[in-house]
Image (cartoon, rainbow, N blue to C red; front, side, top):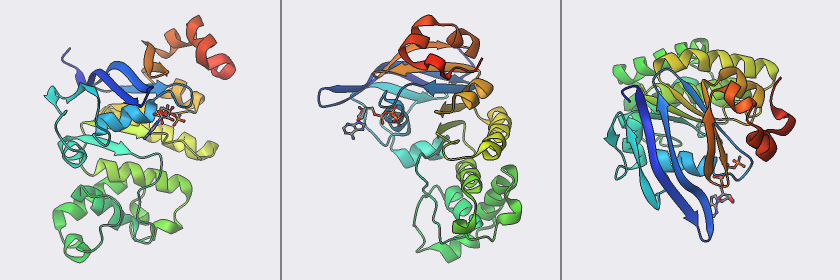
Length: 251
Ligand SMILES: Nc1ncnc2c1ncn2[C@@H]1O[C@H](COP(=O)(O)OP(=O)(O)OP(=O)(O)O)[C@@H](O)[C@H]1O
């Protein structure tokens, strides 16, 4: 199908006898938010890491815009357009918001500060970083120390860092984690806008957010996708209600 941006084709990953992902094929289409839900330990983070290249698959393939990424390392996948936000923050807390965004634009993460001064003079990188900060509503915090941001603002900064590389697809691992009601609402607004730029594969435990945001939902149980469908289809699927969702589905 022509509107497929990202595709996994029969991905497998075992840890010893445990099949963390078991024959996972799914796709992410232009303009959509595709949520991946499932109980703790279902294999969601494993799958994301197989897609980003941080974890080598036992077998199967990942492609972005029909380009096979299987033999491509994580940094190169990011440069090719796989944007990612992390479950655990990878921000450099002692540095400013703008410096973190510039590191993102460099394709670097974490504490790679040794060559920082020249990088901050690179007009192209700095303007990409500033544009990303403006997009997530953090323009006025450019010179703020990252440690001084609220938790919600750090989450927004994570998104900005991913945005600097102008991703073709986003992988987001629990962007709502730890956010209060107001922060979650803000993040929902941001993701609603971002999906127009690049589709989002979203791992999220907050079912209200998932059902408010997702165009499609895939349910992962014991490493296997047991269903993919619209929120309405997932909501009324008795097997899924029994296996996982229970009373968590919003009415
Ligand atoms: N490096 C590893 N070595 C051994 N087992 C692992 C490793 N990483 C994950 N697992 C196991 O693989 C299974 C899937 O874990 P994974 O973290 O992918 O699940 P998840 O759906 O993301 O869970 P959660 O919702 O709690 O984040 C779990 O049983 C986990 O204990």
